[in-house]
Length: 319
Length: 320
Image 1 (cartoon, rainbow over the protein chains, first blue to last red):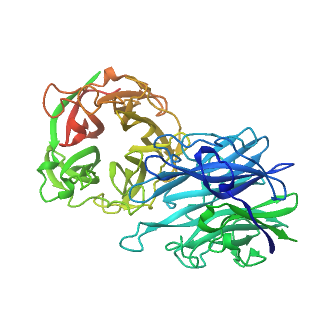
Image 2 (image 1 turned 90 degrees about the vertical axis):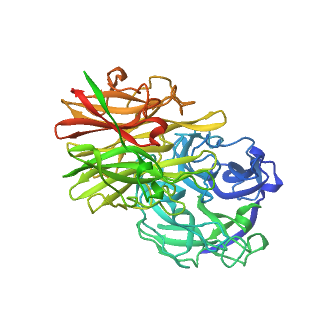
Image 3 (image 1 turned 120 degrees about the horizontal axis):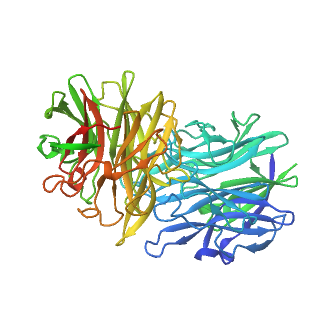
């Protein structure tokens, strides 16, 4: 697989964002229309009192070659949850799937904890206006911590294949302290669940579907699955569980696996081979991949340095 | 018609020596009837930590089967340690409910974690004992019953029962966090889930008991008992604000059902109220009903939700 890089295609600091956000355009997720591509992403504001971040969903509409910004969301796409709910302190990411006239948006809700920084769970919201706005189906999550996926359930990516809704998501396996002064850092892996209606999920409780490549402390995030020429491909990102924020040798890289049955995945991180070496914006980190098909053209969206603080870029699969 | 004749407080954690983790509280009594004793599980607390925060441990006391006012022994250590960092039960195991399952004892418990915007969240965990209910091991690091679309937080107060081969988990689920004088207070309602095996649960997704004293009434401790061809639920309820004193604090309520799913509330029939004076003169809560040698008993908490222990009452008349 050869991918031709298009470079950085969207910089959130060059536009006006809703919800008082200034930077971050993380985890881009595409919804293809006949004359444009709507890319949802998570951006951030700061809470006035605490100075802590809140993640909000916004979108940018781009032309179908991803060369031009047509429109940026003026309003909040989905509100944050109420007091004490799982998505009170942020929604990151929002993963969308079109089902007839409606769009299901699977959210990863963030809420702050005391002994660890955060807990997450996956919620569901529905849009009846092509993704301009989403309403949550309930105040609680559709997938949360369970016996063998004990915390940090998130990054749900959903596709209906045949009669079955498949969800690939991540779940936490460990909170570890790597130094006396350091805060607990998380490790998470990719799992799978299935559903007949997209609401009630049967999970493969605790089964890690993608093997580790850099050891037990590998954290894996944001799976996306796509059928390319009759084979299923999963893209995701992975990193070490500590010293990953500023050390480029331990930060996020994009991983890849293939499957013929959606159950058994063979990992092959040689893909995606991005045609030229990293540019400045993605030299230290490449993360949060999203791969989609636009009338036969396969695009890769991904974030670069600082987890997407200054936007996202794209690449095209060369056939 | 029935009433509960009070037998007084039977267990006071402050009287138990050499257990700093059991300094105070004996909350949410739940029984396991053994050959010579009635083992009463409860949750207790060491003193507050340097941040003024509590943790809670589950433990038990064995009461003499022939004289329930006589204490035979008290657990030497908690039945379960606290969960590891970042897990749902890192800061507490309260309340606990147990059931015999072949040669195991299975416990369901509320696991407590601490949050930033609200003080805590709770989800229901499960643990098994192979030594007759003395110590327990978790089935997994996560909960068996956690939040869902219509039950967004605070899943607690489990009461495990088995009727006709099906497992029933009565519990409470948070409805909202209500800001009362700047302090978030949880409102919760009684709910039900069923399971063929005690591990995989299907939620009914309905409130079982209507709210009576206000829409934001908080309901807890849904203790279900079968007698006279019907099901009886004793539970407790309180107002949503200023509930830490006598006026708005917990009282015990009653409902009955032919099928475990549809319940008719009738608090006027409950047959127990606060006393004029003494350990249960301000509130009564966390009822648990059990049969023993031809009599029916209720264990319950008094003032300050069990800070000074639990008491017993015996049924006069019959449930039916």
